[in-house]
Image (cartoon, rainbow over all chains, first blue to last red; front, side):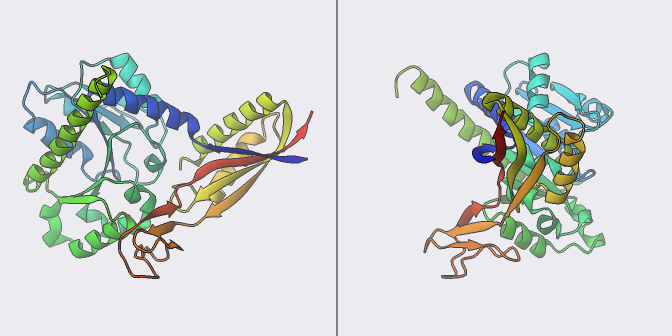
Length: 232
Length: 114
């Protein structure tokens, strides 16, 4: 019997597809945002508020994942932007193949910002790279401030943590200072915004974050194009 | 519970490596980091359940659990993160970065040539 080294990632096939997707997004100048949270934290509501605020001509699109039903796609389609539902039929997370397949069948016009709403779950989506540029984790104040410590794998990979439903703070024993401390412990580099999709407070900060990431993406795109032309 | 799909990806990789090397695989070794989002016991359960019905059986799974580690950007010491404390235990700097714990790697196979 001999031991032979393999040294490959278990999810190397997913990572390979995700790398292809990332390269495609980069070339097309698309900012892809992977939105992760527990069920009921307000991902779809946040997307509704976000879509409602974009100018009608803006190239924004949403891929929304659920185990069953196209309820979310129906809610999001009202805002006039392209929306497509991925129904996983049981899987508790989206993977790169599902995103690739949905985009290949869908072929939306060039997209500036693509939101991917993951299946509501704070565990499984964390292992699957979807080729996104930014990972956003939502946490609502009704869930309790210790979620970052209970689900460190998910919060550790967050670029931005959105603390939602802050209009409910007077009614729940949620300590914002502790929530921020726990997020910082698990991922010191994550940005944090506090919002309420009901009252609209904080949504400007969220939109500014998206636009700043988009502007950074557009700057990368021009450098990719100029190096492609042999000008770099 | 995504350990079942992870176990399925592992078996695919084992099939591939075993065909490529023309060898019979007796065991596979994986490294699982504390922040990989994968539970070792649940993975073992799923792996065994899937292997049972294939021509790879019996195939055992050997798991190496890896700790969450950070490295200090100031004094360069490498330390294990305990109780979510990511500041450097040696110099006290909060400027540290991840040095391990995300692993989900297929590390080795025990094979017999056929």
